[in-house]
Length: 150
Image (cartoon, rainbow, N blue to C red):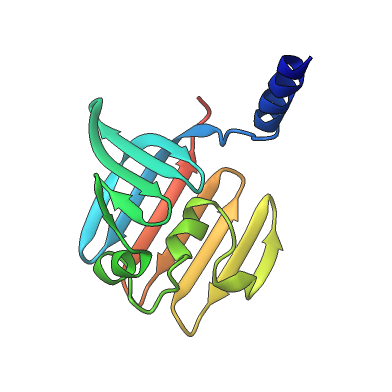
């Protein structure tokens, strides 16, 4: 009887966890210090992998720290090196989760998603249907992700 209770508790504890689906994507990621484009897979909020001719090109993992091709650094350092030090540390995590940025400020609903504009910062951020666009004209940053039907 105890064995049955233990098994139910163990299996029941795992039943509530929903795996984050992995989606095929096409990505363009440009900043003054970093440029990559290719197709690969996105596990929203967790991992982005890009390939070129079936060869691993780029592997970005999000956790307590952000890891790029196996090198892990703090989010603040990632912003300083790759994006902009003026960005909040959670920005890349929000983007790769297809979630609003800057606490959802200036968010307007559009067909199939939402848009955020920060004209004073030169930032446009759109998430609609299966497309994400983050464009910062002041810092020359572009992140475009398009989910592909696999």
